[in-house]
Image (cartoon, one colour):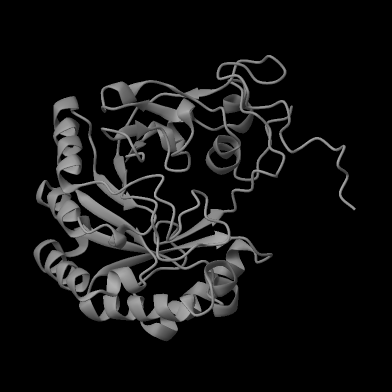
Length: 317
């Protein structure tokens, strides 16, 4: 029986932006090298995954569709601010639910950026209009366009446990079409099961070989394995002393190199948030412009600790 008197994980922690529960100075990160600007195209998705970190689904429109004009405005701001951005990323929800997805990608590619689109490669991407647009983008811009496919596990049963019956086969059909169209692919998987990193990569390597996918399972940039972000797990808070204890530079943390643009339902304008993992947290909303988004980010959330800083390490002692 569950102990109802037990404190929830992280009780008393992550309450003060500037101080940890024990009064230490909370670590913060400065935007030192803005390399990637993300756009959340909207939280609507064709499926509802069991552990979606932003609860995307066919009915969740908490983040509404961005438009090509809104994306163009932020691309202008990149130039105005002199940000050395290399890559424009699009995430969701399912980006191909947004009817402006092809135009948004083309705008970024025309300005010389690399473009990364996160997708489940299922029905929204496979609509004739989207396939025609992707074929044209590949023809015009080649490997500067990459689609990162969400494939939680190389075992269809495990993937379908997360994303629903038949989802693996539908994603595989989309990946097969992308392969035949010559469109560059990478994969994003999850560390939700007991497999070691080596076993997971070996399983994906066999899967890629079997299907003729030109994806390197050993390259973390081509086969990304994300840790599970469980808010029920106890994690330590990150203090300024942790950088030295862990021998980690704050410049390696994601919010040192990226920001994400979102548009909330009912808002007149988009906002810039500190992190792709925290689109709903008011504390991590930095303002409407890239200029406002250049401020420090205080690591006042469990995801900051578990996902971005620790990776299994501990800053005790």
